[in-house]
Image (cartoon, rainbow, N blue to C red):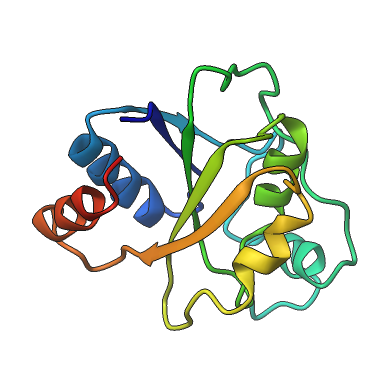
Length: 158
């Protein structure tokens, strides 16, 4: 059995709730991916083409810096990475997170929350940020009960 950890970025708390349920189902720890400069409501206004999140996702701004880059993931074989879907992919802070650490030889299982879109090409887009890891598209967890999340986690054999 591999050793796993659940990592996540949550802008509004929805992904955080799913991450906690997943960690509880797996019986493992959690690590929150936090931007160095927190997002404000205006930063997250996707209807404003000049908002911080809009510029990041369109490539008009650098990936956000992380508040912490000193975490140690060496003891884990499997790293769950959760995030809200933004513009049909992971927020760019997820790219920054994957680039900040050495995930060589690890299995990264993605999970997400979304208001309406699926994973799209998220797994392929993130592969560039962790080329030596196995990235697996997981599941959208929003709206799932704790029992459903546990059933999914159990099905992974982690």
